[in-house]
Image 1 (cartoon, rainbow, N blue to C red):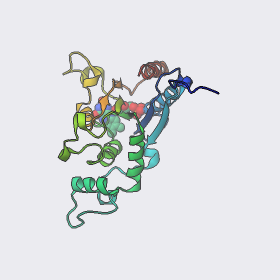
Image 2 (image 1 turned 90 degrees about the vertical axis):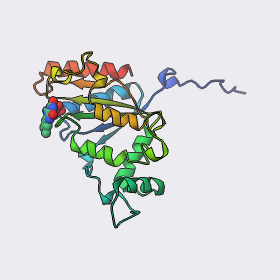
Image 3 (image 1 turned 120 degrees about the vertical axis):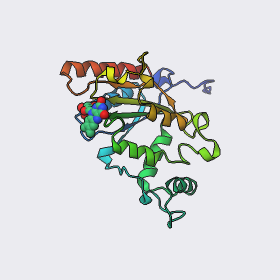
Image 4 (image 1 turned 180 degrees about the vertical axis):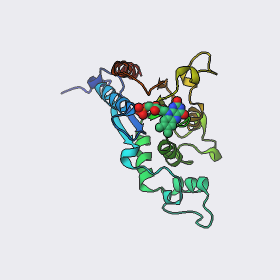
Length: 230
Ligand SMILES: Cc1cc2nc3c(=O)[nH]c(=O)nc-3n(C[C@H](O)[C@H](O)[C@H](O)COP(=O)(O)O)c2cc1C
């Protein structure tokens, strides 16, 4: 009679744990540098047997503005209170379907990669809106119950920023003498940490507006290498 193995080994990936990765992609042009970086990530991660899902926010026509339509069953329709309604919806399965679909992907993921260009000092509005609506209070964090930072509801998940800038590196590192890329985009990283995410090293391309084909190829190689080292 065949013996059951004492320890199950994942032969598919030589015993190395694979990850479920969600890439949240925010750029209107699939052929842009950001679009290509998203494609490089999908390919590199799949080659290493990771599972990958992509939320292409422009492709989905994702609604950026948080409003009453985010909720199927308002607790107080007389006076719309965004944070109160998010908490209520989280407790009563009351989010609109577009939000629920994204929440399911986030719940599924071990790692969430955000791929975007810097526009006016931060994320494109469509991605900011995705964060406001999907990382709802009661879903990603709950400050009323102390579910923040290392108790945040996203505890155990990792997040990574991959972004491009028009401005040169020196502009961004003016106040960061050690040039640690993890210190860039502090408002975004702080919000992710607030929800309990562990941040992994970001991938940042500066001066991304006038790149030669050669530059682009070496960028793709560098990104591939960084993802392989995850
Ligand atoms: C609306 C808009 C706002 C921008 N704001 C900034 C900015 O604040 N800082 C910056 O470094 N680059 C800024 N840029 C330049 C973009 O970051 C740059 O075009 C992008 O990173 C290039 O990537 P892509 O080829 O994938 O679009 C802005 C571009 C646009 C269209």
